Picture 1: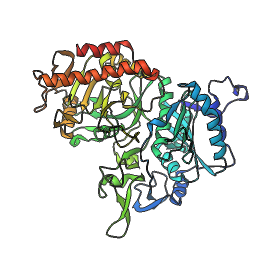
Picture 2: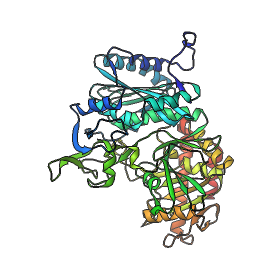
Picture 3: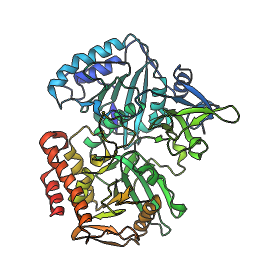
Picture 4: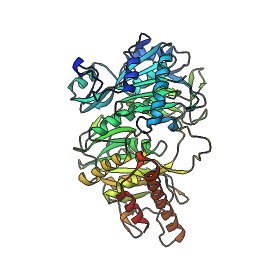
Amino acid sequence: MSTKSTFSKAEIRKDNPVFSSLRSVVETAMYGNNNKEVKTIEEAYLLAKDSMHTIVTDLLVKYPEKLELPFGARVLVENGGAVVGRTAAAKRILGENPEEDAKLAPIIREAIHQGEKKLRYKGTAYVGLDPEFMVKAHLSVPVGQENNIYSWLLNFQICNEVYDELYVQSRAINEGDIFIYQDPEWHHPDYPMGLAYFDSNHNAAVILGMNYFGELKKATLTMAWGIAHRLEYVACHGGQKKFTLSNGKNYVSAFFGLSGSGKSTLTHAKHGNKYAVEVLHDDAFIISLANGSSIALEPSYFDKTQDYPSDHPEVDYFVTVQNVAVTLDENGDKVLLTEDLRNGNGRTVKSRYSTSNRVDKFNEPINAIYWIMKDDSLPPVIKVTDPVLAATFGATLATKRSTAEQLKKGIDVNKLVIEPYANPFRIYPLIEDYNHFKTLFTDQNIDCYILNTGYFLDKKVTPAVTLGSIESIVEDTAVFETFGVINELSYLVIDGYEPDFNNHEYRQLVQERLQKRVAYIQEQKEKNEMNVLPDEALEAMKALID
């Protein structure tokens, strides 16, 4: 599927559903004389390498020729200041608050007008790596943002001969290209944390007052997910892999969890090479409601660096690095000092070649979805057999916040929070995601599991326990027992992690956590139209408590 970049004169009318006021403002800004188009990865690299904000390390990029980089290309570092993560409070969606929309229209026009005083760079890339789903995206950034546009063109798929040919093969759809405008030096007293403003129906966004690369990456994905959603795909912020067993059986699994929950670790785990494992992606993909196939949206990975010391093999695949310290090794070479010593949420754009078993599409239908939570009332694995409950648990996915997000003062990072489907980047009503996931569980008979990767009561659920549990499910040797008197839930029997249903305090803890989900559903119904769930979700959760 391909988006529209050009139009016949007969199509260029204000009532064309592709166009909108905000989209016209953002797109028009990209054609000014102050814009310089960055057409190749090599050009983007050289701009970033020479930027005054850059630290050029002595680490060589692995496989530069495969990445279309010059021989001898180095890993580049750029660090921010106080803000080193996403700013969720800055997000606004056009249409949610018409009064604020009217206020923002002249503010954004003025911001872009002021931006014309600076040289800007424009880049174009594809989101989606298969002709079945490829959309074109354009990013405009000011001078000084060379590292961000380089990282963006690495993270997504820059236009080149190979992918241009695939794109030509795609079926045209009545959606316009994605347009994103960024200005990190913008300030406004009413938006002290910045502004990420989305016209979700017209694939346009402005990212103002924020420098963090993750804002650009997630803005792009947010709108690509929106397009996919409208085309009957399930938008997935998670990881997906395929197991091929010795008997030739395939098992496709998807893991959904917020940053730091373990989804990347589970996605990339090779399970001691007991199976042939292929990875689609660890962060962004889509599932077809028509046939259950899946497509990756990005070639690269935007990975946390905290688990990769300087001599870790994964460092070989770093290409750009953000918010990570640099020091000198025994040879006097500039190398990375990772493990989040400088700050939380150190990040890297890591090449696809860190995963030898990467693919861009699974034609096989998905077999199972795993909701990853950190909830100490839950044993390591729960199986959910009711489709309504399966979709509802995903919509009330409970976990802890990570350093990937910049939080308002006073917010407890250790507090258990609910993030529907582990996707804080949704720009359409939650009930639509709910219906899509419910369709997967009903029409395609996908299994649903909840993985607790935190603590069960006061006992840590180790990675070995989680991986071993998944292997037993894949091999069809897992033994489940009914979760108390709840027939729709069962727990995987694991020595040392047995729930004691005769313990009043434990039963009370489970009830409290279920009640938290009920309270969330009721609260959203009262105050937030975007997050309203159907009555059946609320009734199903109440029934568990009863």
